[in-house]
Image (cartoon, rainbow, N blue to C red):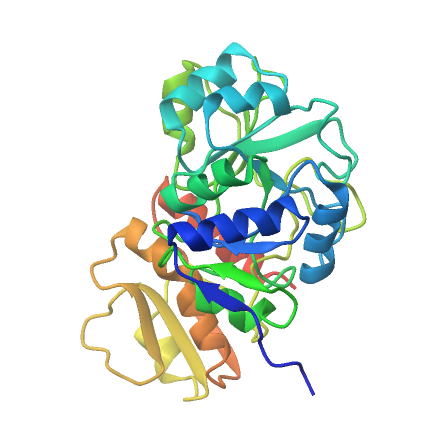
Length: 332
């Protein structure tokens, strides 16, 4: 029988934060809130602590971790910076932007999949930044879920997925953004490359840099090959229930399918009230749809449906991020 969840969920009181910071300094791992999704944090400079993240998640060490800092003046200790990186950090941090930069030697190989680069960001979630400051360490934190499964956006999601493998979760409320951070490769600042779309759009990055930002959907990546950034594998963020994607969900498709199949629309469909019809945002607001995507996929995944159907979002910005997660969630 599977072990029952035993992790304790802590409110963000000063006493609890001091306790959790001490746990992190002692080499333990802690579920933490961010504005994107919930993470599983460890002291980023302690390779033994970081190994616990990989063990708890079942994550291959070829998939690197993102290092989180609490202040911009901490970046130089972790990475080799450049003018473009500092410009973006000053504009978008704290916030959902991860930068790929050459790493300093203090960053353990297990954090960077053995590569000479590091993924780093400053989260906007005030409670998490406070925990980073109290711990006195940069914190490595991938999403707090079994590797490849749907990312968590609440403390209860973390406990449901990893509660038997970790001891502590800091509750910071539902994630405000709901999708993982935008990842930008700035190892060569003259050729910025978007690796993962997120809440900060490619257009916003290009405007801030004053130059185009390249992005094309990455080729299929194997779990056995070291990745320069997390979230690049072909199959990721995936429900256990088969997921089929459609450019548009139509009444005809719903009508010809059984009640054991669920349909996930971006916006509330007019006149559709069947029990197997769901939507991400009543008005089709894309940031709202992004915020609810993972929570809705989790709910549908445990509802007993034989198959899930979802439609792509239209547009740029948030639509690119939503569609990226849907493609990976549906990949076989």
